[in-house]
Structure formats: C-alpha cells, structure tokens
Image (cartoon, rainbow, N blue to C red; front, side):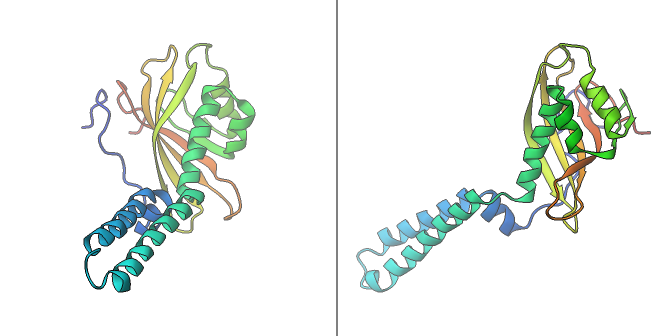
Length: 209
C-alpha cells in the first residue's frame, strides 16, 4: 500500500515520447554537447597524424555543426508535451489566483472533478468550487515536475502535476492527474477530468472504491 505521508517515488506510467523527440526536441543540450565535445576531442587526438586535414577536420566539423544545429532546433521547437506542461502550470495558477475566466477557458463544458473532498460535473461547477473557497486557504501555488503523455492520435493526453501551495491549506503538497483533449491538431488542449493522485496525509484522495 502506498504511503500517504511520503511522496511517491513512482506514478502511474504515461506514454513516453520517442527517443528522437525527447533528445532532439526536448533535451537537446545533452546530444548537442556530446557531439561538440566529440568533435573537439577528435581534433585534439588526431592533430599530429597525417590524416588530420583529410579526415579529422571534416569529421570534427560535421560533428560540431550537427551538435549546434540540434541545439538550435531543440531550443526553438516547442513539442506538444512541453505545451501541455505549460498549460498545466497555467491551470494551477488560474485555480490559485481564483481566475474564473482563465480557468473556464481551459475546461471542456462537461469536465469532471473527482476527489474525496468534492465531486463536480461541468465547467461552471468546477469554476465555482475553485473561486469561492475561503480567503487565505490558498494564497499561491508553485508547480514542480509535470509529467505529460500523449495518446494515439495526438488528440488525448494526460499530465501529472506536482503542486505545492502556500496559505492555510494543510497539507500543502500533492500530485494531480489531469486529462486533456483537443478536437484537432490546431485546437487548444482543454481539460476533461481532474483528480488527485496523492495528497500528503490523505488516504485515497481520489475517493475510489
């Protein structure tokens, strides 16, 4: 049984991105640095060999150029997973700030909230719950790690959000599952379901049987 005091070390598995997407578009610094370092080392190792100009310089130049290109492409490209991570942060901040208009714009009309504290059906009801809490309960919130997984078709996704709140709310640390969908590749991601995965000190926060 998972402890309700200690933060879980593992969470339900989400679909993983391809190695190409992860290392080139989301974490480009690692392969870029590896290629640049390999290019420089090749020059240093082969500098006194007869094939230095014929082989070492062209090979090293290609490695360094490819490394720089990967870093530039990865830096300027925002993947859908990264977009969902940003949307997740915006969702948390809209709740923390009791920003009704922003929160409503991020919810599907029939979105659901499931927890042992409150169950709600429909965007209006969720917005009402989020914006009519007692003052001081949540003064601000910070988002830690956000895991994101996109399912087949790229129109359905899930994020897992680590949230720490500041205010009178106890406990302050929690993990939440948020399901998202969009109608097409050009439409924004909107929330269809929200539920807690883990709340420190609370057993079965999602209220599942």
